[in-house]
Amino acid sequence: MPVEVQEDKVILKHALGSSAEVYFYGATLTSWKYHEKELLFLSKKSFLNGTKAIRGGIPLVFPQFGKASDSSVATAALPQHGFARISKFEWIGVSVDNESEVSVRFGLNDTQIPENVRKDWPKKFKLIFIVTLNDDTLRTNLIVKNEDKAPFDFQALLHTYYSVPDISKVSIEGFYNVSYVDKVNNFITNVDNDQSIKIDQETDRIYANVPTETIKINLGDESNEVFLLKRINLKDTVVWNPWIDKAKGMSDYDDDEYKQMVCVEPGNVSNYITLNPEESWEGGQIIQYKH
Image: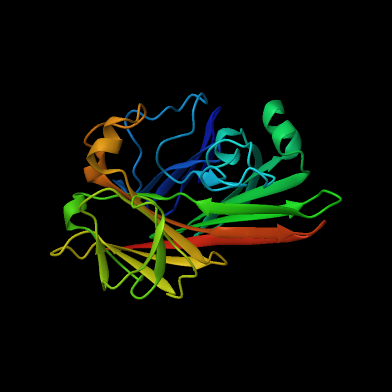
C-alpha cells in the first residue's frame, strides 16, 4: 500500500521509491526521502511524543509567527509560533493515489485544540493540510477556513528544515535586492546585496514580499544537489540557522546539528491576513530535489 496509517503517523510511499512521514501531532512532516536519501532535517533530540513541538521536518505555524510583540493583537496570548504545531490533527484520508503521485489530507478545527489555547484565541476555524509526494517533488498546502461569524486575522508559515551535508558549503539564491528584517541584529531592516546567501553565523531573517519565482538552495560548490522552492500565495520567506551559541541553549537540539541544517520557510508573516466569515485562504510550497 502506498499509504500506511499508523497510530501516531502516516507513511507515504511513491511507486518509484520516494517516501514521506507525517505525524498527527502538528501534522508535522518529519521525513522526506528520495530513494532512501533523507532530505529533511530532524533533530536526534526532537520530542516525538506530543509533549513539545517537533524540532525539524516541516512544522506548521498558525495563527501567528513568533510571539506577538503587540499585546493588543488577538493572537498576543498564544504560544510561540501559534498552536497548530502543538495540536493533534485528524486523519481525513487519501485524496490521490496513482503512479505519478500520492496525496493525503489532515484536518484541525477549533474543537480539537487545547482548551487553554481556545480561551486565548476563541475563533471558529478549520485547517486542512495536504501533503503530495511525487518521485522527486514534495508539495505541501495549507487551507484556512473562517467558520466564525466575524473576520479574524492570522499569519501562516511552513517552517521547513532542510538537511544539508555541510552548512559552510550551502548557498541560497533568490533574495538579491530584497529587503529583510534582521532578527539577530535588533530587528533592523536591510536590503540583501548578495547574489547568494552564505551561512557563517547565527542567521534569522524575514524577507518580505519576495518577488523571486524559484528560490534555489545549493548544497555545495562542487555538488549538483539543489532544492528548488516555489511558493504558492506565500509572499515572505524566513531564513534561519541557530549557529553555535543558540544551538547549545536548545534542549531539543544537539549542539553540533546547526552544521547539518538550514531553514528556508515560506509564509505570510510580515503582516496579518484578514479572513472574512465563510472565506478560505490557501498557501503552499513545491520543493523539487535535483542531483
